[in-house]
Image (tube, rainbow, N blue to C red):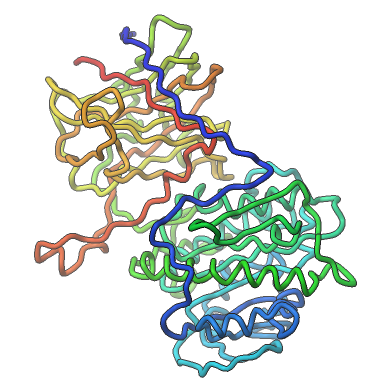
Length: 536
């Protein structure tokens, strides 16, 4: 095996976070906490806690929403076809949004303009469908069994794994409806702390990880942590100092009780005060982004052999509408073109081989075993003798499976010419695996950035018509060694013809999907790649 000797580069950026104070969302200069400039129709799916929150002189949410230009309607017990309004526990959301009856329920929901709770509604109905759908489960839904770090399961139930399964499933419907804004309101906390740690972990997952783990590209889904706001007077999910802040404490139970576990007047009004500016921000983000994007293809309902009426078939996960324009490698013919390179002066090792029966649907995959010493590097690279033209694709895609989550790896892209090769890197981390074993990843060209040790460091890759190769890499920019195995399958170039516009045909530019892949970077460590090109 050919090995390269290179200098060790040591550039490290570590961000220390206080887990007791929570996280601030990345600053966005264009966030707008002001109300819409016209009346927007909103509907809220809820039961008793939501009713209290809406009610005048209790939570005041209905009245304050109206003051912010939202025409509010709501569902409650007994509402809708099949009395679907009776069922708002976490496992019921798949019936609402991912069942054979979803088209019927959604038609009724989008066209509902009545009040099923008591709150002031002074605005006139502007007509048309509801544009915003808020939904919330009630307080017993914080009683989730299992373990705080359980990965998503494969069916809906009242466990951490089952709840994650539910939200991953319904996200597929939301991707198919970028013309609607969906607001998830987390279930309020309980006074009983038996499963409080699970509730905290699950709601933190919804706020911080859910969309990122799914590489969700639209701006039409947002989460308000009603649970966290009610756990402590110093716990917040609000907009302060020009950023969205999610501030947690070490308390996981209800801090605003009434006669029972329904949140009190004070807790409900605190939630209103913190929610309204966030809703305005979520609305403006949606309007500026995914409301103009084409819908994703909606897979068949789980368990169905044929797609439901009006739907089309597809696989698991949040589907995007890509078209494969070039298969770079599916590893069915082996992996002899992929070579391992590492720092021979250390104990680092890496191997990359084709492994039968481990790929998507039992096909071959590229297995990469690695043990990376601190301050060193290793790569599994596919290199070309002459530049290849990849400009037909808008992004590079691949499927990944891992046994460990949270381990950093890099996707590397090499441009230029054989005599003067340029190195670009995109940082990721191994995901929590789905029940099906693989998660699709995608990286847009402008997400590949020139490495620090080359000139023009940090600039985006701009010439997909001139690609010298690619690699999956690992760097030892950590204090301790790390070891793992990943499996890669279906490395492809993809694009979506649906993004072409009349302006593009006339020479203008076409819109591209906003990519949230960067959210998958480790929050505590941003490592610089320690990779070097092999000289061919």
